[in-house]
Image 1: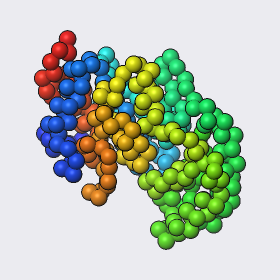
Image 2: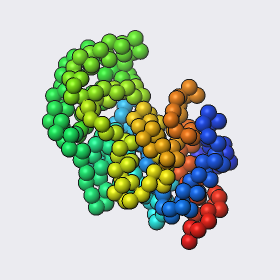
Image 3: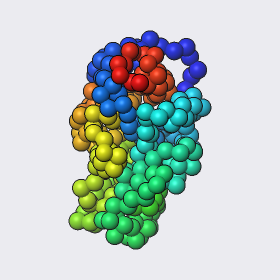
Image 4: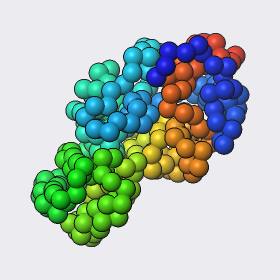
Length: 282
């Protein structure tokens, strides 16, 4: 992310979706009503830029500092929801926040640890699936199979475009469609237990644990698994991090990845009463 001067608040948001004054005011009003906000943020493509090799992904200094400042606000609870495992994403962020891994199948907080029972039941099958996929795609250069705790990912950023359809067929032939589903992401195939659970359900589970409502949530993400949040938590302030103007989304607002740090800084300013005058914050 380039260290540029701060933009005007309205310039952060893409005209494809809502306008910045509406977003900041909506956040401000949510904070005024409840006195507390919940930030749910994706990692890859949101807090960190997408990299050719997933292991290289890292949160940049400005974004990390903005996130750190939010964790010190007593009116804000921060949760990172990622397709990565909890230990992986926690090591990359390194802050005392709530972590949801494997698209929300596992959630780890300061005083709780939740694993979706159906995901735990399917966990022992994931390594075998990855082995079969590796065997069936060994002659497709650039294929990267990533084993996580309760899910797996097959990355194809380094695969030639003309080989991707064949790669998709081989992956699908390697997976039992009754027990597992394959979802398309940003140059990745996500292999998950076929259960009715995702980031949207994880958001609701966390809010429920804190006796909070969707109207207190700010959800930020860039991929199809993040659309689960936007479609499920329709009462939240939903922000899609877009890479192309053609991206279709259920979120009300859109920003670019290079502006994520500034959005987080703006959120902090709202909480501190800088961006807009929030009544009854005490």
